[in-house]
Amino acid sequence: MNRKERIEARLKDSLAPVHLDVVDESYMHATGAGAESHYKVLVVSEAFGTSSLIERHRLVNQLLQEEFQSGLHALSQHTWTPEEWAERGGTLPKSPPCLGGSKAD
Image (cartoon, rainbow, N blue to C red; front, side, top):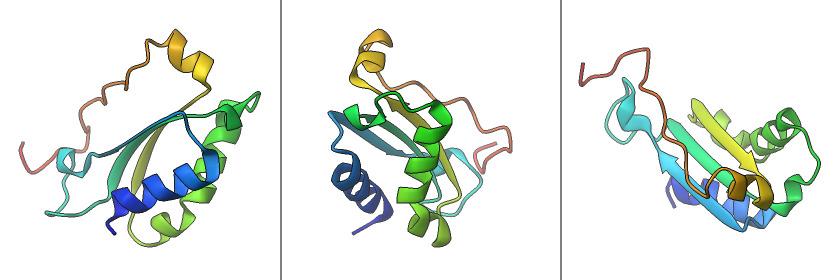
């Protein structure tokens, strides 16, 4: 099982999302092939209820602690309730370019 699959499984098991996107964005950064180091997640879950944004991010970080300890370097998080997701058009936001440069530069 690769890192993306482990992230998906952990978030599905813990948060029962109504929608989940896990995107490996390592290719956008100065990493080696197959780095699996930079990810973006969109988690839409009733579990977030009235939690603040920081509480949601802390929860996701805690759930993925093992991944951070084994090479996950960066995680862009979009943690929304179903209502917030609908308000935002039900789409995954685009990521800005990496300011640290990449091998493609």
